[in-house]
Image (cartoon, rainbow, N blue to C red; front, side, top):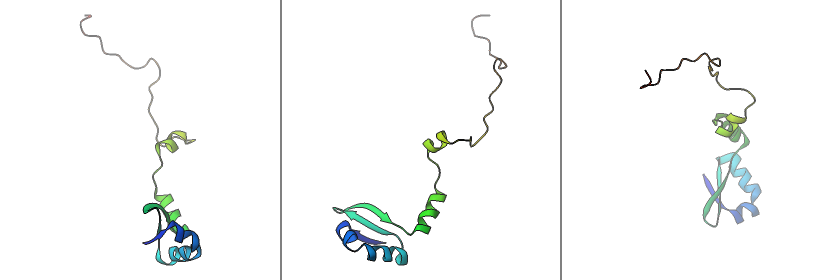
Length: 85
């Protein structure tokens, strides 16, 4: 994976894009720290499709991912309390 300081990435974006498409993902650094990765759109889609949904996405989903068996109200049996025989 190639590494590009942000200044070079900005100044030579076309080269960065070409390198991404021909060599694979390219890392962009900012002040020496990893900041971003430029990936080919096909790779990004593959990664997106392979990603598991977040808890937020699961909770906000319009449909349930699994069926949950909920007993009817009042049909559950209760154990007798100890000491009240």
